[in-house]
Length: 155
Image 1: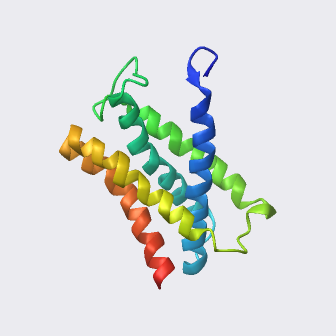
Image 2: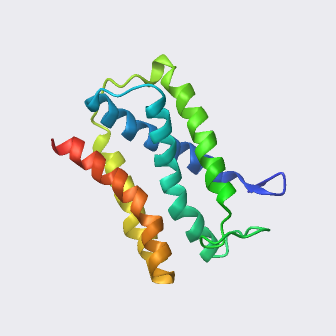
């Protein structure tokens, strides 16, 4: 389903899920570390972009979409990642100020970590087979967020 002849609407649904997962994981880790404020919004936006480092190269490699002005990272322009970061930061900042996002239950941490682990295992592996260096660079950020979540969970 394409919105306005340009944008696949399914991407919006996936984006919302990924934003929630990113914000939730960072919120749990930061709660344990006693960190709050603008740093939480920044790191949550970075966690969201870590998903895009895997998703967009995979979509481009499969021909799902291509950019009019391709960039050097799997043909994706840097403005795409900056846009994900900027919108993710604004949404995170809004989430932080809503009462409904206060974390009272941490039982969902395991499913969040499982989803985080699936991305590098499935998509990251395919990107590495296309281009080893870029594939590793695409996979590394999400693995770092996964490790931080696992560290918090087991400590």
